[in-house]
Length: 348
Image 1 (cartoon, rainbow, N blue to C red):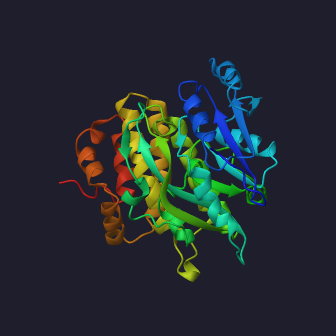
Image 2: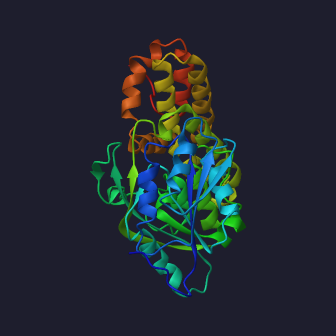
């Protein structure tokens, strides 16, 4: 049975909806099964083109929530729209295909009940991963990513790898959300990393709870598998290049040593995927982005660059480049981009 504790911060739940009738009922059930009840629940229909709006409208007979509608602008825009209509102190996000554990809010609100000298911005927890059928795939998923520190204590930690702070595992101060300007609505991928990086650099402290607080559903239709995500990734990468340029006079090379090595392997894989599928227009775009990233990496001395790229697992790219890549219609551009990145070196 859920309860509301007096004098505790109020919580608004924001659920973006886009063609999500398959899973949205399970998501809502997990919200209304919380041991600590939220103060308000807002579902934002982001211009669904199927029957999702009508399906969710019918669910209001079972659940008390506010249903808003807007034109399609992406998940970040839908979250911002929901927060703008909320009145609570804290904001909890849930994607339409994910599921909260019943103590999700109870766990995440605990850090907010303590006193801090510095402003407290957000809490977040570990997660379990399920597949599209709801079957368990990984428990305590963040424990598998030992190279990624939790919680974040350095901007370098936020730049070197994907942050793996998911909105669905987080509880955020609404005042902090407003202060940093919410989600960047240009992004349709990596908006989460961008959002929490800005919260971090704005000086807000956070707390990590190493207990799974929800189930993250991972399936083939996830946004991470499409070209829209790849384009968003590069918008975010350029945003980072602008914000954290190399400063040789201070021996500070965040672009060369941290940001470019992070994004180049993914763009190489994007090129491989698009070229194999015969999508030459997007393959050429991806290749141009590889060259853009490799120019930043080319500033690194060759040996150190090669070692870093080997650590990133680019040996498979070297193998592929000798076979299929160099036989493609863009073979000279591929060779140039990958050689700039130190990924292939001289061919025997």
